[in-house]
Image (tube, rainbow, N blue to C red; front, top):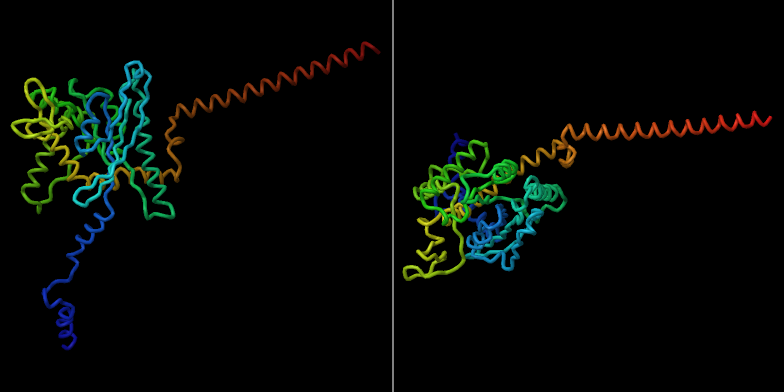
Length: 366
């Protein structure tokens, strides 16, 4: 009976008299928030698409920064044999005390050459290299300050001038969809009427489904989220692929300064949701940055890591060799061996013939 009394009384001993029933772990999110803000955030965004689709302009517009101040645009003659390059630019952005270390990976030369068959091998090897580096750092002795350069999101720019996806678009997205979160973007959307825009969006989504391409899907809003957030998520999902216009120029429209593009017939406002999906794309990126990082960590990186461990830590080069290639190598080796044996036999025959000639001459002399 006394033990029952004790158990009834015990919890009350540690209750804060000022706030009955308060333990204190409700403060944990604040601690995490403070730590995260102090540490800062890292995010790597890759932009891929043919040159002239306004990739650089859009990135500068998204983050209000000038990542590409002095760019030399190559002429047609230089593009013929041009290979894909990887250019990573890192910029530290601070907003209301929150630091973001943003790395934008550009891929100049993609889709420019006459033969584009191998143009995305460079991009794939770059994505794998970042996974490789992270795995190496994670397995090392000093795991305190690992810099995360893994590609968290890829904006894939689709030309507005075609009738949907090109074969290169399909081949590239299929080659990387298990390695990175793909967000399809229709570039230079001000070249399309609203009807054309909707038609192109539907066509692209149908082709993505037809070719089983996995693009980044926004997570559903939790049931306890407020109605505004649920509506925002619904609108963002309905807007994929995002049709965007980029510009850093300030233009006067209706008595106020706006970022936009001035045409003889009027102004296209970058941040006007009725004109294009720029604001939706930015909202998607900012509100789902954490989810993009989590999907990279829990899905794409884990796939890479498990594959790597299966091979016992060896790189994929030997593993990925096709059977035909191995057979060809074996045949070439066999031919080399046969040629070597034939040469040795010929040398032995020559020596034997030389020996017979000497003995015959000796016998004749006697």
